[in-house]
Amino acid sequence: MSHNFTRALGAIASTLVLCHCASAQGSATSALTQNAAPEIITGTDGMKLAATPLETFASAWAMTFVPDGRAIVTEKVGDIWLLSPQGKKLGKVSNAPTVDARGQGGMGDFILHPDFAENGTVFLSYVERDAGDDSLSGAAVERATLTLSETGGALSNREVIWRQAPKVEGNGHYGHRLAVSPDGHLFISSGERQKFNPAQNMAMNLGKIIRINQDGSVPKDNPFYGNGAAADQVWTLGHRNPLGIAFDSDGRLWEQEMGPKGGDELNLIMRSKNYGYPFVSEGEHYDGTKIPSHASMPIFEAPSVAWVPAISPAGLMFYDGDTFADWKGDAFIGGLSSKALVRVSFVPGSGDGDAAPEASEAARYEWDKRIREPEQGPDGAIYVLEDGEGGRLLRLTPAAN
Image 1 (cartoon, rainbow, N blue to C red):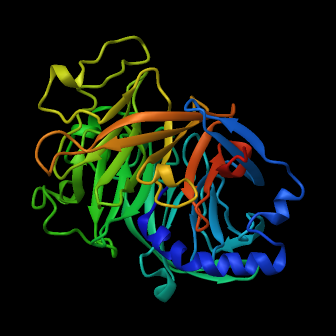
Image 2 (spheres, helix red, strand yellow):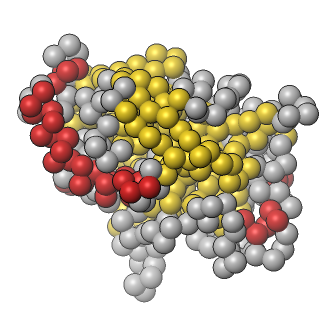
Image 3 (cartoon, helix red, strand yellow):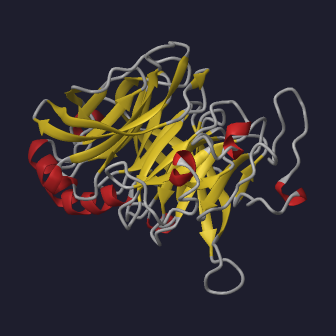
C-alpha cells in the first residue's frame, strides 16, 4: 500500500520522529539495530541494501504511517497493531472488525484520510462471511475514526461504505486494496473471486476498479453511472486479482494484479478502460489452456509491464524520498512467489505530451522470503512486510560501502 497522502504527512512528521528518536536512542532504528545486525541484500542491479529486522507478525497484510512517525500494521488473522517509530509493537487497535480468516481472506488494507491529522478518519478493508450462508464471502470497506494512545488505539464511528456484490463461494481473489485520489475519491481494487466471468459482468462489482466518494456514495461522473447499482461504481473492468493500487506523483493511478499461470500485470488505470480478463492475458490457465494475448485483441487495454513467469505481485508503492534519491518516481512491488522486492522504473512515453510513461522492471532484491507489502517511511527508508506466520518487518537502507 502506498498512499501519497501518508507521504505528505510523513514529510511533516519526519522532523518530530528524528528528534524523538535522537533523544531516546540516537536513531530511528536504534532499539532494534542494537539487537539485530542488518542483512545485506544485493539486487540484480548491483545495489546493496541493509535490511534491519524490526518486528515479527502473524501474516501481516498492510502497513501505513501516521503523522507522528508511528505506524499501523494489519494482520490477516484480524489484529491491527500500532508500532513505535522504531518499529516495535506498542499495542493493538481495539474495536476492529471481527474476521474469520480463511484462504486469502481476513483483515486487509488500512489507509488514512488525507486530513487524518485533523479528523482521525481512516479506511479499512476486510473479508466478511454471509450471515445466512457461511460458505459465501466478500470484501467490505469501512470508514472509521482512529484514536491513538501511547500503547495502542481504538476504532469508533465504524460504518461499512462498500461491499463486494454478490458474495460467492471460495476464499480467494478479494483484492480489497485502497487508495485516495488527489481529488479525494476512494478507489478500491475488487478481485473476480476466482470466478473468471464476473470481471466482464457489469451487474457485479467483482473484477473491477471501483471509484466512490468517501462516504460510500457514488460520483455521478463515474463512466458507467446510470447503468445499475454495480455499474455505477465501476471505474475500470477486466481485472483478475488486483492486490495493489497507488497514485504516482503526477496523480496517475496504477494497479498491479496476479495473472493466471504467468501474465502478472502492472497497469496504468484509465477511466472506463477494459483490461481484458478473462478474454485476454499474457499467461495461461493452470490446466494449460491457452488464453489469447492482448496483442491479439487490441480492443482491450494491454499491461504496461507483464511478467512471465509470474512474480505474484502483492503491495504497490511509489517512492519519492531522499534516502534512495536515484529511485524517486520508481514503483516497488512485493513479490510473493518471486520472493523479491521488485523495482519498476519509468521513462516518458513516446508521442505527444499526454503519452503514458513507459514502464519496465529495473531490478529485483531477493532474500528467499515472500514479500507482502512495501511502504515508504517518513525517514525515506523502505519498510517491507514479509508474508506468512512469523513474517518480519524490515527497514531497507543503502548498505555502507
